[in-house]
Image 1: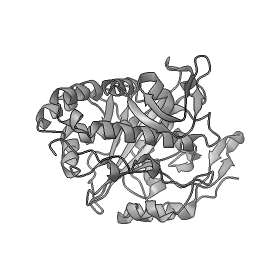
Image 2: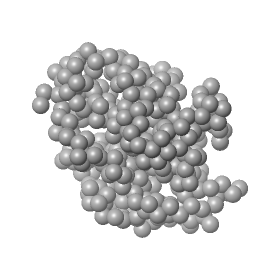
Image 3: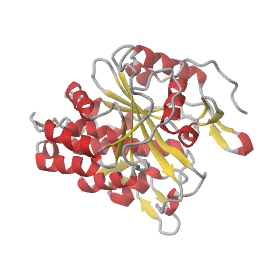
Image 4: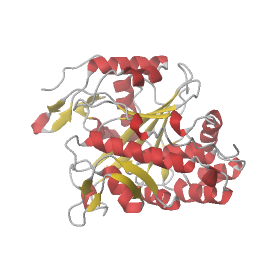
Length: 369
């Protein structure tokens, strides 16, 4: 049964999508754009990195130019997107399903006013929402209908908060980043296989991921009864591993390595017109005391699974938990919300994924510490 209409908590400004400086297809794992905050502001060679990033990064009009950033309480919200463009020759497992482009991965990065941490919230692709001007649909349909501006409007309306910036990354950047790092190691919570013609299987426990295998690890959802909920947890595990690899002396104290990664990675990044190298460098300075233990991952609370038009499987909203989430975003108290135990996912699981942090592991210092 579909949920009834609910009053809007935030009135977004509807915008028309513009064209990018270069035509690049945004793709899956946009959340890795978060590492640019660490990279571009690393060490004493910021100027050179800014030049490289600004010259190579793609820009898109997401309708954010001209609006005031941090106009409520000094916090900042960055929407990280990855879209799934069907039929472009990618892995067989990636081209099944709905026609057209969908925002296959969607995360909200909330940076509180005091810059004490980073909160990364995954939004599940089948969440049933109101897409402004187009009625109720799955949240991942907004990108195909109206591009970046409509995604921004949809998320703002859902969460009752302002989006300050947008970033995404394409497949080439994903491969370049993992290969530049020599792969990353995650503690895989459960064994699974992905792909049909040429399947890849991942055993439970310590798993080294690189290139296409890493891409398959973070994309798979049909192997799990919980579908997208397990997938977003795997994505969160992977991001945490990537951040730990970046935030260590071997990387950040090596100007040649950092420049090489930025040089290879930047051309695959698409950002809105206001998220330039100088802005990212400014955030890096503000977040200089943040460590891996201060990056908190969770999933938006939801109601149970439901049935949409034509029998499509959807995820209903949990209005009570969403109301608490909107209040936390509005009052910059997301830390309290994440630890409050409010809300669950559609299968009754906890929304917080703090298990990705290893309390036994020594904290990795920033370069120069």
